[in-house]
Image 1 (cartoon, rainbow, N blue to C red):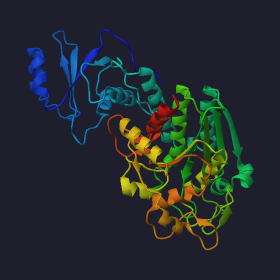
Image 2: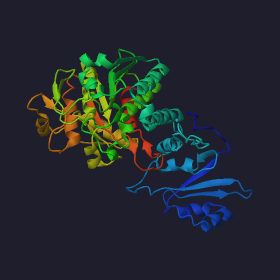
Image 3: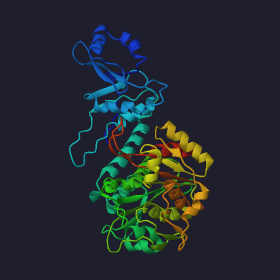
Image 4: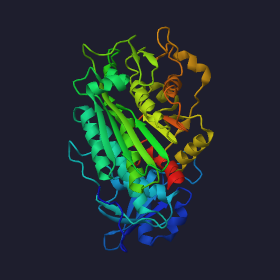
Length: 457
């Protein structure tokens, strides 16, 4: 992506104002600009925008409204609306927004446009990096977030398991990482759950495996759900539930985004990325309710519902990751509607039994404006996974605590990792917000990258 940052001595200033500061700021304006602002009924409301003209007709400065500093509903990404409002040119922050680093990141993220299938010109605007802000770090994060958005926004006819593997291979090649794939019938023996979910599709399932970094550094393994389209299988989704299922590989997209940040920053880790890439389709050989499969770990799994397929493919990948006894094992997946019912689309739940990790994740999520909320791995609900004919079922009856029981299911496949973190993301912005257009979204990756940067920079 072209850089959004530029050094310039002639950049147009952007002045941030709130309702409480507006009168004070207005008094500092030249009389003609002050009168123009009043005639334009500029009220300094959040998101309010006004370009003030100089005497020669060019833009002298831009006014942009923010929430009050102590407002509970304050949006630190509010400046991400600016790229869609500003005329072409180079700009600078004339005064400090609530958080200059996050405002600069929001500005960069606000330049994103998905233009693969129709023309959507990227805003021709650039920003002088605010003092003390690492522009290279901001671009690293923004470029990775845009990779996740592009992968999720690409429709499933152009983003199947093979295309997802190609995107992963290209990323590995860019940073000199090793890349391998276990494909099709090769999965049947070693990764039977991945094979079972993907075998009904004409698009061959696979397990993507990327390794990067010094083998002597701490092992960090990322696992991302790569269900490139989810029909629900024989427990078929209704059309409304299938509509945005191109995003069901959002865990894989965000894991690749996170991997890009880690490798680009050269963090001192031995990184491994595992992505089970499948399409959950309907055919004569599709896996069925009450089928039983023996997982890679040896746990027998009864299929309570074929639409609970994400945890199945993650289970085999987690089992493989766990065999290496990584210092930190992280999985991301677009897994349960229950998480959305509990917390909505913008606040993914995360699960871990590591209290230090939980506190660090929560702190980094808040610092990065990448919200996450801890949910419990509640031991009494573990019995709900019991099956009468197998070790466990993938879909307990009753319908309660669906995100928790999914996390408890995955926990069965993690035994040796020093710490484990599971995040149940949505990977989608249902309606546009500043810096977050409608469509595929980078969720949890920025917060986790901040955590990894603190630990392994």
